[in-house]
Length: 193
Image (tube, rainbow, N blue to C red; front, top):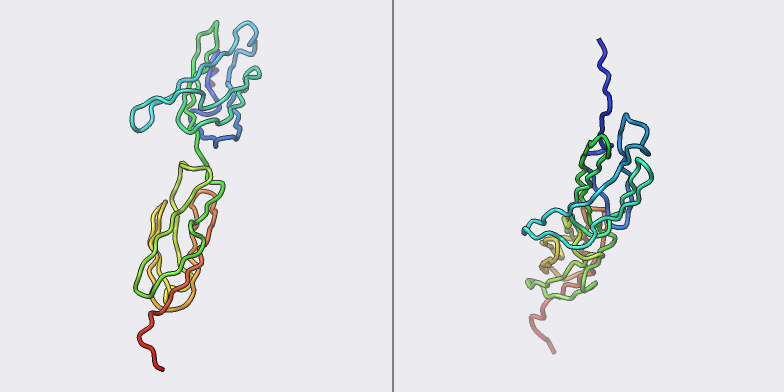
């Protein structure tokens, strides 16, 4: 036998993500086609952050066109889009994660001099600051000259032997890269006249 659903209501997604400044579309899936008699409305509810505080202001902007909602990310966080079809009193919710993408990265300073056996520290700068995914991978072009160990915001470079190397970092989000030129100096052990 066949089941026919009458007056059902749902959204095209129950959860989704959008980058700040980008727009996605979520649609109301309704069997009642007369949305004039039974209009579709929405409301937004910001959700608590990890620290328990609820963000103020709009995390997204919404432009409604009948059953379609164009949602643009405005500020990082989580928001619930709650859509209701009045008259039949059907409600559905979509959880929207607004993420801050990595547009570019840079290393400060972009070049550094260190002595063999010494260390130097560099900072990683994200644009925009505070991306949702800040995972990175550091590497050295010549580990016999300089090695690197770091996290999402700083790295320690160790001079192994005299020479030059390039320290690189690549982001997991967007595969953005940055480099730092390293000059390792050999210490002077004596002067002969």
